[in-house]
Length: 186
Image (cartoon, rainbow, N blue to C red; front, side, top):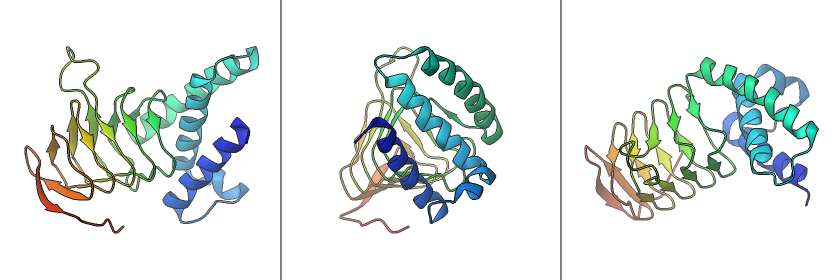
């Protein structure tokens, strides 16, 4: 499978989880969120590419300008350097901040006003790892070197500073586990 095919499959998964279907050619152009995700995925692919041709560098510059426009439009601060798995779902894409070195797994759902980053400027590498199928509620803050296990649910306005095990529900400030063995339903 070529790099281009892999990128196409990731974008199709993003479309399915955000719009419920793979958008046709006309629908893609009408959805600003699709444009943002398209640019995010292409910039990451170009950023991680080993041998960049002249065409790749020109494309990167153009995509970066457009990405900046859509980031401001949605009030998003998601770095194109962030490692994000397929099927990223942003139901209300406003005010989300994700550090460039944070890591997100497949099929994560991130609600509005979520911050994922380090605790202070001194701790540049203390960043969260978010595994697959995690739901992060509105206004939640995931700070420092913590891991959110597969299938976690983080409640609205929770502040997570410690690891959360798989299939757990966490809420509060600071976040505590309020349920274990939960299954996520969207």
